[in-house]
Every structure is written in C-alpha cells, then in structure tokens.
Length: 219
Image 1 (cartoon, rainbow, N blue to C red):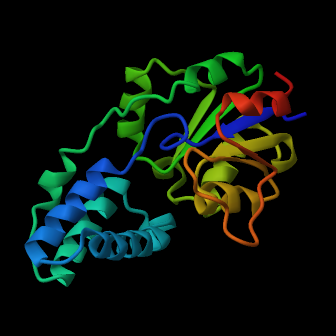
Image 2 (tube, rainbow, N blue to C red; image 1 turned 60 degrees about the horizontal axis):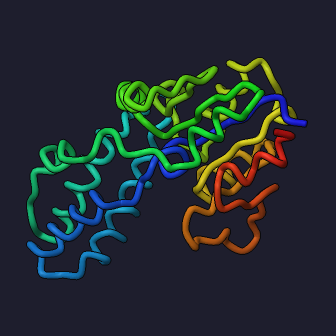
Image 3 (cartoon, one colour; image 1 turned 30 degrees about the vertical axis):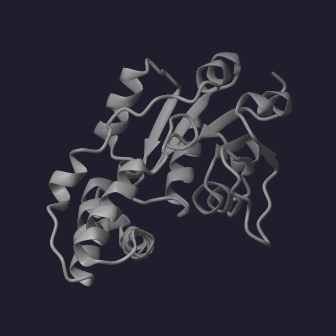
C-alpha cells in the first residue's frame, strides 16, 4: 500500500473554474473584436511557453507568467490592457470542493501538496481553509512547474520516500498524470468534469471524487 499521498491543489482541493481567465479573455476579445475563445487559446499557448522555459536559474513566479502572457496576448491582437490590475481581481481564496476536507481527514498516511503556485498565495489559501498537511511543495520551492520532474522529486525528498512508495492525485492529465507517471509514481486522475485522458495516457486510477479514491488507499 502507498506510504504517502502527493496531492495537487487548484482544481483538486479547491475550485479552479477559470472564471477569471474567461473574463480576461472576454475583455481582450471585446477590445480586439474577436471571439474570446480565440484569445483564450492564444493566451494558454503563450502562458505554457513561458512556463516551460521557467525552471532552474530561469525560474519565474506564476504571477509574473500570468501577467506577461496576458500582456503578450493582448499585444498580439493589437490591444492593450493593464494585466497586472486585472490579475489583482483574481479570487485569492477559491472555495474547497465538498469532498476535500473529508478526504484529508480520513487519510492515515502523510500528505504532501504539490502545486504550481507561488508560495505566499498558496500559504494564504491553506491558512484561510485551515488546511494542515505534512509537507507542501510549490513551483517556487522546486523552481519548476509540473509536469517537469523537479516538484515531484522535491516532494519525495521531503517525505524521505521513493516513487514506488507514493501516489499522486490531481485533475490535470498533463501536469499531474503524465508528470508523475514519468517518474514511476502511481497516479489518480480526478475527473472533476467530463474531461478525459488523451489517447496513450493512462492513470492508475480514475475517480470522480477524492473520497472515491479512499478504497484504493486502504482507508
């Protein structure tokens, strides 16, 4: 049985419904006279291009990547927005999913959160929801973003365990499932919506809720 659980945060423990991103994309689209979905696609591509390059000595915090990618997107479509001011409107403490606290309360093994988040923002979120776990690894701590291996490896070092000892739980096919599986870590794909894993990618478990996974953890 697994000796610890690695756990994503945004979209897994707390809601991350993309409302703010949709509003920002709609604003840019309205100014440029194009569909918001086109803006969102361009923004997503630019964000991940920045994130893919942001590791090691070239690491940059998530807040910077968000602002810069939004500004680049607006410029690409010939408009200007105050991306930093828009980013300040983002909900800093999104609500928990109803199964999050019952899941954490039932687990009898150590939990390490592994999140693509800036350290201070995540700390404030956990404090707001009164969530205490054994360890927390942010992208800022690892100086890399999932699905790169650095966040997962740092989590294993902090727990003093190997890849075979743990399972990683998350809602992102690429960042969570593919990232953890590349290191030989068992995975649980949390299917919060109707999104499916892409062809060729398989998780150890696929569940609709966190509590549905408890049976596999022996709880």
